[in-house]
Length: 350
Image (cartoon, rainbow, N blue to C red; front, side, top):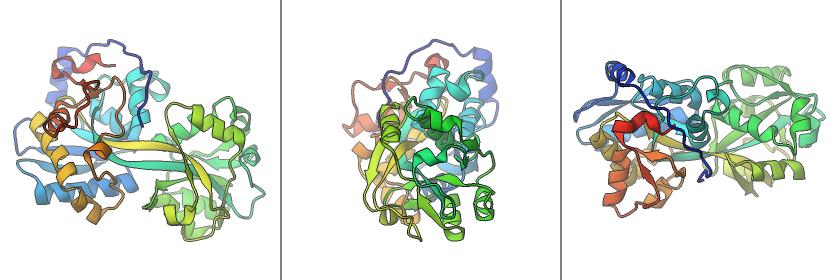
């Protein structure tokens, strides 16, 4: 998914702050240094661990360590602060960080995570407990609704879609629940949550906390309305998909009362701090391309099988890490309209 119409602001990073980042102990330089990659819970964490194993088996002069991080927004902030060398982050969060929007409006990201390669897509939709009267999206008005853990980009993107004019009146009447994903399945089982988002990678399955409540609570698909479809299609920060076999596509263990569903989608990508070594990022991109099957053997959620798929989540006017760009150029897979980040101007792309 390409996100267009991203504005360009010039907020230069000071030399002192860059020096502080380098002193943090991450942002490795020479070959052999460990690239510390932030990854949040669920499928993202599983992909991070699978990629770590592939680097261990197939990497040259690079080491890789998966570091637990609180959601895509938290990973973006930690990367900016120099706590990790890279992270698995979605394109909607990256777009908002570049524009200083939403969760970044009052706390801007001074160092954007630069583009690397696709990890997987997430498709999001809504289910409700079967013992409620909720059947369609309109019925969520007045219900207790769980849109994932605060700080999760799946939550942020969901709320963005629900605040679109077509469905904002329904959203304003929802009782939004704030809790961690570890607690949500129990709350659904106990009946304190009426409805929740479900999300997963098509052809692979739902993410961890959805799998758990699938095993503990009877749920049904909350039927989309024409207004919800219009809201998804008009929201620029997410894609729109339709599925005609939800049980097969997302591996539900129960009948959720629908074959066909619609979803709003995130593209989840490997990104890198601007000061992370070009050689290291080049090598990680090579592994993603040449040894993606090894990653999929450990975790099938890592979906890209070609160079076109690795670059399919490209964001317009957003910097690529030079290491990834160099690899794509060497493979004749580079688009001349794409932007290569300049490390000397790392803070100027916001």
